[in-house]
Amino acid sequence: VQLVESGGGLVQAGGSLRLSCVASDGSGSSFAVAWFRQAPGKEREFLASINWGGHSTSYADSVEGRFIISRDNAKNVVYLQMNNLEPEDTAVYYCAAPNMGEWHYWGQGTQVTVSS
Image 1 (spheres, one colour):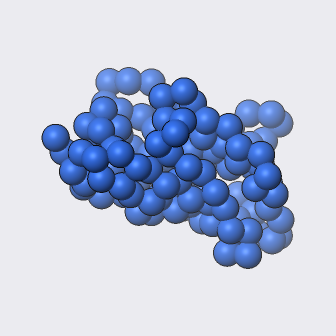
Image 2: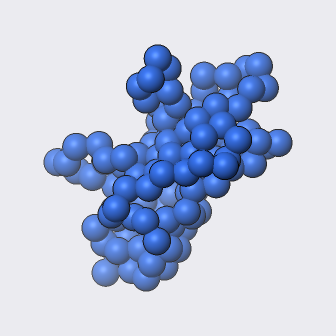
Image 3: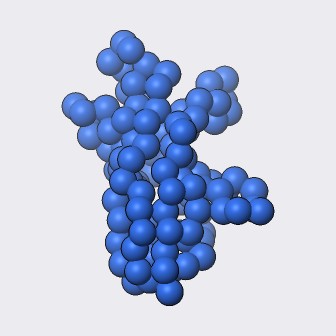
């Protein structure tokens, strides 16, 4: 499984960013994907997940209503649309895929910095 994130950058508070995760296992199959983030000095935090078909999503309370997870299986891409960003959203954002019931595979991360 390979996961490659992109779309991070510097944005002002109140702005938006859309992150992308190209998720592939080499067979063309779709699988569940989640987004996490880790801020300096803090533990990795779950943000959102989406099932293989895109019909079921789950969000952390901290981002529900501001972040939207979606996917385009034709392109093997999972998106995280982030709106109304706050300085507290500054972190490295990762996408992950499961194995044996755990989030096992991880991308390299993409930095998001929100200025006040």
